[in-house]
Every structure is written in structure tokens, then in C-alpha cells.
Length: 181
Image (cartoon, rainbow, N blue to C red; front, side, top):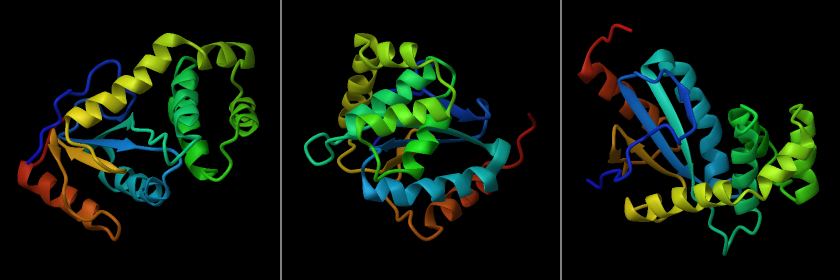
């Protein structure tokens, strides 16, 4: 199995219980239709596993085939500067076919972001580097399509579309046993 070469750290956007026994990392592209299909599946997994899951989304924008993916990834990182990464993440996936610049700024307004700060952060070289770094860590860890999932540091090679990923995680969780938080 391929390993996640760059462990989850404080630079990552983490949703859920930081000490959960299951860590799910997704390398995804906001314009990718497969990632769009995976989005509600991951939401259901989060609902089902609750405190037993830590979810991390890393940007893997496929710029050659998805011209809006990089800007969308950058928008989530700019929103993170105002503690709204996950809200922007969700609104982008829920409006995946509307990723023009004016759409992104509309989403920022809808989320109540400080628009001037958001606009400045969209041009921040450190946030651009973060998106590029996510992509590079994905390449080094064997990501060659989106979405790609890693579970507790190991690349998941199975199907994910029809509850297979959820079932795999539930089986893994039951093998680990109960955890006290």
C-alpha cells in the first residue's frame, strides 16, 4: 500500500475529532465531477462515524482540465484565514458548476467574510504556496486522480461510490475497538 508521506499537521484543515481513531484524508479538486460525487458521501461518512473520524481535505487542483480548480482551492484557503474553510469548502462543492471569480466572491459575501481581506488573501503568496504544497505532497504520496483517499496514512484503493468506503471505515473502526475520548 502507498503511504501518505506528509502526515496531517497544523497546516491542514481538519474537521472532526483531532484524536479520532480514523483519519480520512482526501486529495480533491473542487471542479472535478468525481469529487463532487464524493462530497455527499464524505458528509454521510462524517455523520455516521461522528467523533470516531478526523477528516482532512487537501487541495489537488488539476489545472489543465479544470480551469477554476486552483482559484476555488485558493478561495477555501483565503476563507480559512477568517475561520470559514469548511463553510467555503461546502458552498463550493454545492455550487460546483458556478466557479467563476464573481461566483467565488458571491460565496464569500454569503458567508459573511470581510471581502477586502478575502480579496487580499486570494493573492497572498503563502496561500498560493499552500495550495501548491498540497498538490506536491499528493504527487509524492502517489495521488494520480481525484478524489484519492488515505485512511490512517494508507492509500485507499477500493471503490468509494456506493457505501464501500463507509463500510471499509466501519470495519476498520470495529477492528480497532472502542476508544475513550
